[in-house]
Length: 465
Ligand SMILES: *Cc1c(COP(=O)(O)O)cnc(C)c1O
Image (cartoon, rainbow, N blue to C red; front, side, top):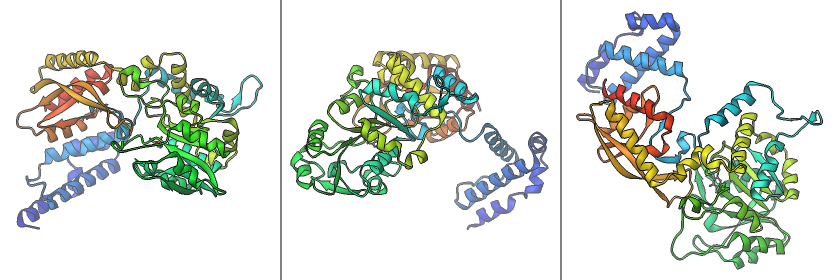
């Protein structure tokens, strides 16, 4: 520690002294002495650490200190989990909650959760019902599956499938498909957790049908295929198609399990994007059990959906793990609403994820112009520009696809873009934005129509302060 640091540390007032400051006394009346004391301690600790790290070099300012404590108290008041504006242009942003729901769907979730519901009650018979029945026939209609089950997420779907069908025996899987999905979900570890053993076949880039066939024996319980959602092997490659793998499995009376990752009910080619396998295609190819996420390209709640042959699903319904992995009524309400939108062919309008995906370049340009005009009308002291950007799908889906989009960029004199981006994160409705070169980029694609005004207001506060 150098002399300046020692001096700065000595300057820090004690907690009781700070609690007597007029603005903080007011907050003690509004909240409590304890709440304000905790906030004062937190800000003091932060300041002490910043001095030690050499990041705080200015003398102590009581006004700035008050402001930091009040910001801390306001943050507590609004709650920790809160809405943010996603200006990153990444549609399925795992850190920002992946999919977003329409207001109609949010009302349905609120209605079901603010009142009692028939979650496990069969209204016609007046007897106990099954929570899975609310969505079972919708999933079957949309995918052609015989039966379906819903659990907490796709990781849970894979775990339950394997624990029910292959525990104590071997799962045959290609080396090229032993992937890590992110957030520490690794296919080999999940297979082990299910009590099954892995039988790896082929190589990283090439696996042939004969590689699978060679290892099938007494201990084999299933052949498994994993869609390598988040990475691509290009060049000298070969994989076995789901159809060929299913046919081989059936020759030996084994199930073929397919972890699809992102569950798709619509063909992405309709939006001018490369083909991705849909759930229906995987089942039509002969796969016996298909698992996928509710909140990736499907655009629904966090959930794992298992669809496939009734006999296999029956085993899963009786497995004790199901209880540990079960979903609650809010998820059910949300999933049912999402699936209904697909069945009624209103998905593109009612599912924000699909709306973002389907946006054409011209629509994107028009929205960016609209945002730019609103920002210009607010006469902000900033340099604004309209640019073309590459947005992404995200969520570990289609890593090699970029979506041509439009954005408004912001630059403020004497304020580094990192500082501006940080200030945007500290506003009442935090804005999450990218930085490209020396500008903050606001991608219109992931900003809702109802968020444009909020964004202009927040930017105004930051720039005029
Ligand atoms: C995303 C993904 C998972 C995990 O799904 P969650 O719903 O996030 O648990 C599993 N397998 C594949 C192939 C995936 O892409």
